[in-house]
Image (cartoon, rainbow, N blue to C red):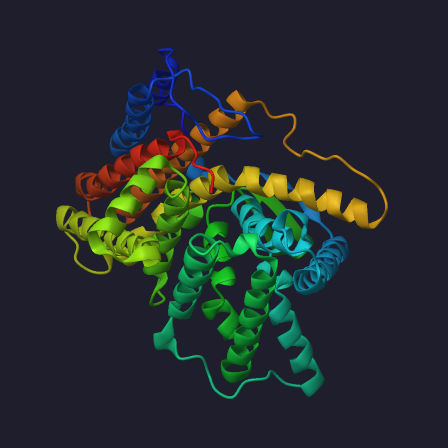
Length: 455
């Protein structure tokens, strides 16, 4: 584990001087941080930088070899749990479709909005970050395709999935559904449009699978690619062994040192990092000022938000590719730097995703339990995060974001050691990534420090 005294010194700088900086709201209350913003940002940057400096001189962290087992689950027990989970999720999907088309218009009262955006898209993402992706078992269109193939006696497909397509369909799906439909168009507040989008997406997934086979789900379904990407950073590993299913703990950077090899995967990872940050930024007064200034200057009206989102995505992609290229220039290599280093930013995406959305998922779970209770005639007043104080919530966001960047630095250092010929070359090659990660640490904490503007 990382135990150098210098890292703890950097962390302690986050808690030295009392002053105030606004944090995001939770539970309707506003918390004033005891740390002035400049100390918060400097302390986080120092923590990330000191981690990189220590790694550069000490080599790989000893925790790379650390994989303690938590036990083994029998195949029968694991199968029963899996089947139960699939049945519950499938019932939820069907009920969400019915509620979306026939239920109340208000999102707060409609099961569809709560289930699709909170428990499904975001909730399963948080599960994947902790214990790996369960999507291959839960995917309704994948299961339907399996059932149809079983009835036919062979897999339904007309041809093979073109290798050159890579995961580009998933990139397009993520940008359109999460980046635009959810974050920009606000479909999460419109139940009928939400289930209409689900139905359309399901039809596209099934048509693609019938055309190119089950590999379509693995490469073209953005949910499959997203959850599998988050699963790389999961500290809990679930693997099949002869005795059943083994559950173990692993360093969260270990799965982020393998390069990506499918076309479009680098862009997908960067799009995930960017989109969750953009979503947080849109809730701040700074974005509102930027938005109205751009509207007045460009005369683009309501399309301005979309233009800002796409422009920001292009900038993030360009910055990452330039940084990866500089790493190879400093380290003495010249082939595939973006593919090698892209997985190292997954911990950043996962940490910000968890920090940004776990209150939303918990609140959605509370409302869903209350809705189910109401349908059963059992009045409930549930608050999953009712025990969490505002200072504790603020501290959790800080810890998640800084921790994610530290893990990313460790992963990037591991890639540099494997990629470059000497230890000094690895230090040089790691440097541009460290600068990028420090910059993004500061940006992420600045975003979560901003007061929230009601939508």
